[in-house]
Length: 433
Ligand SMILES: [Zn+2]
Image (cartoon, rainbow, N blue to C red; front, side, top):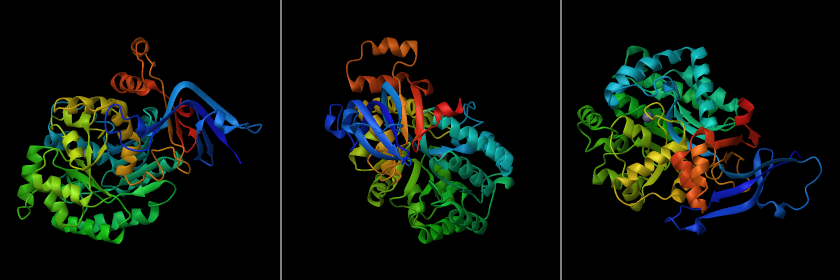
């Protein structure tokens, strides 16, 4: 027995808050504690309720900071760490001018390993304990990514992008190679430690019908594997997809025809949707992944979070590094708030913090393991300090409620507000500095 107790003000959600005052949606303990054994949560509650602790038990006291489940990022590209903040392009030009040249370097396993470590450490510094990531077309980039995640004991979903047209020759596989390489990665990594392999056709534009057929065959063979791709981010992209797949009614119809929709399917962006596409997304229980900083940065459009939620669409949120401009899920929800505000009713801070913890775990179908701090789940924890900068401390002098504190964290916070991060019970942020 090697127990640890982490102390702080404890907050975790057990369902989505319906409105800004929905205080039944979460548990909050002012003098809270999490008892951890073998990397998993053994119990949570008040510190007093733990009773007398045996001698020698390690107690990490983070009071008065807030303890929450670690944040989850549902869409990011690790080979894009060096092109964040590249100027002046919309999606298709951005891919050709910046993304594809950068991704060409990931055939080199040494470069891939260096960048995978940098990417995961940046996420951890920002309080993110799990990510769904796109690697490059090269299987060695996926190997490098999973090795880095496995070493950190970090739960990730990742896949080799399958792409067999409309990109430089050095980034193309074939339908057969995409299939074979993804299959080999599934056999090697799916379920090893905390890693899950996603079937990852980049998007309809860079996959031939034969390749989407291959992705479909993989999904049939491994229904437990997530599928991740992109959908309707940009109007030029939608026009090009329609030209390449003229027989389909709309963009989502392409993925639908190949049997790629379902509970484990993550569709990055999903901004510009027809009523038929919305109905199909909802009915198939596929997940629309909202990437606020990226959608603003690339001028892609405004995701209709509130209306889509009212339609019972499953929604996740994500950074979309490197189209996205921040590794921080706090900054991500700050921009999400502004996008929602431009379209009507406001996004409450309770809902934001539900979204980036339990909400995103549910979107990944991983809520039995992550995002909740329930007994038996992994002890992936973020420790938050809402007074981390002089400006935040000034603002916090007038904050009265938990919701206000959360809103200050979201609006003014970044990696500096993340005091510590635990991955399966082990301190990860302090360990790297
Ligand atoms: Zn993306």
